[in-house]
Length: 483
Figure 1 (cartoon, helix red, strand yellow):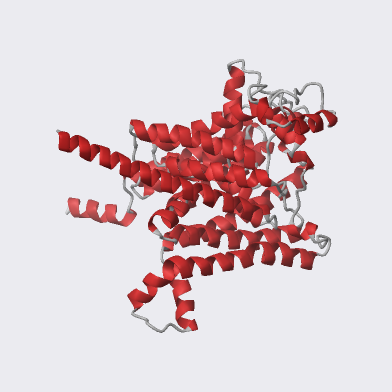
Figure 2: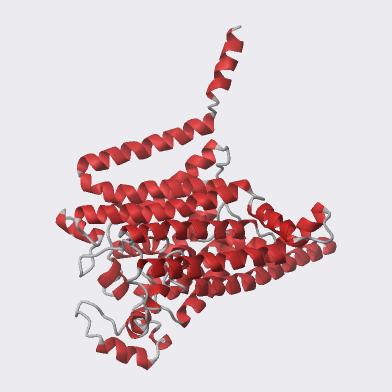
């Protein structure tokens, strides 16, 4: 009878070891948050980033949400499931972002439009095929115990720091025109803008480009109704609808009609097919919807906090708190105000290099714009940490957490692929989140150019990876036959 009672009790609670471990992680995060708030209530600003990160991580792991998976599945096995989830997320983020814009708390800033987006995105897309995860995907997979993904994060971090901090070694990559334009900008003496190709690239090329939303480009930004229509409908919802139809027509329709035994499909059959495609993976669809809403809410909450504290950048608050270590010469730090990945990881790598006496702060990226705050004061950095912890909670609760050590080959792929992702992200001025997801949802059409370049790079990566696997299999077959 006692055993039966225990069994009944265990069934009623439904808690297994994974649930308890997940709750333990949650308790640690809660305790740390309470402590931070007790130290200084202004750390609420950091906690917002951290808790939105946790929420992102929960949903990313729940839906196995990853841009690398989306392009790999499309090009390697012709499955559109993840790409459809991405489009759902874009549509809902755009809708929420439109509401945030109307409320006056939108923190988005558009990216400069130029050829660099295609090139950087192609390099980034090529890299994600070999790492098995995009920047965000690597974070949530690290939360599942994937050591290979942890190597990707380390590689992305240091690769970006080396790219922006390489002083003089790769200046031959920069045309003389960039140097002349950089000198003409009359930058502060603390910055060596004529030494370091990335500074020349930034001051001599990027700063001369126009960064604008579609509404601004068409001169309707002052009219809220027209601005919403252009930024939301023209830039986000219409392209999403077109892409969903293409995904259905190219990838999903043949199999769907065959399974449904439909030989002469009507318009209604195709509509039902589109719905079937969108709901074919419940977890992915729900995760996409949740991520879209969360990303918009994150922007609104950060905007409200900035208004409450009377700041435009977290660096101002750190300066007011007397915590000036790592601030840029403008008293700023990287503080996007919305979901963004890679720049905070670059700061992690740069901070470590600075501890090793590498002169890393005399450039535009760290010295003028983003600063190098210590990791414990890096607000967006807590978002990345939150993604890892949120994913760990979900993986533990679903019994999917497992330490996974990569093979030597996989470790090399992780490091090299991560370095390519870091290089591509810096050239394109963002990754698949900052340069695509956050842009197209806020009326910046440059994100679609990023997606095009990333898809091209990923397609090339899939083809090369398939060739590599075939070559490896053939070599092993030859070795077995000789044996």
